[in-house]
Length: 389
Image (tube, rainbow, N blue to C red; front, side, top):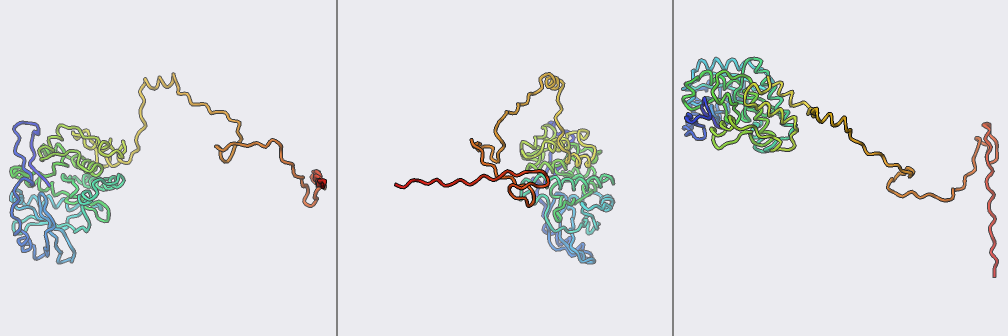
């Protein structure tokens, strides 16, 4: 996972140095687990470290009061020292009010021993990153289903005035096959609490491969359409196996977003319908005005059938003046057959007709009540005798 500081002009010559977590020397965090255990011993039994992200470390713990497993995320010490604790907790309190089936809720947060932390339910399963690493490209129907579930969660949060700002495969958990969005509002809390002080440390909220161009430029007035751009990148990667923009460094990725157009997803995967390609390309518009108005419109566009082609005036005039001639059916004298390709053999002499039987009990030669007179049966032929000798 990479992160860096926003810049005001990606194409200028005097670029501010852009540091990522891959190039930044990793601080010694081996002793932090013991510190977290001691700081939260009265409420949580911290067990093991589950992973490390760009802004926080994740620990598996047990809620002592409710006897349940939880995931505790502790902000990195270098980030904690750059943001205001009170404002961070105030911003994260707003995100804790979200209640949606596809949003991983926040159940606790606070400060202990100068460490900022927040607690979420522990989800048994895998992240979308784990599945994409295993399968590379997801089936089209499965990718669309996951995208719609994420879009539903984003639309609900946007209606509450909350923007995620860090939609990526690592923040999408798959619980019983359904997508659950994690870390909702955390990026906003860190960004709002840190302000310009966080930028000076070399960190930026977001991930370059999924970050919108306006978020990469450090605009302060970004809106919900930045999440739509990230969701478009996510869908592109689920279908094509890689994000729409790749680069050796975060700087290269963000520079390509500012200059290069989006590569057609059908070039990467021909099985993608044309209507789906149009929807993804629109969601990845470089300017927010070029995208859909809401993520709900984006989700609805994924379900639309491709529109019929629109003919220009010249083509319509040509079709009216010279309508296409359909081939005339070939006349045939052959009688219908069960096997059309088999030749039809006609008998030259008809078969002898059987005697008609009229009446229920009339028999041959009788007359029934319907006025039908049966024809007499032919007399048997006498055998011919051949002379002997």
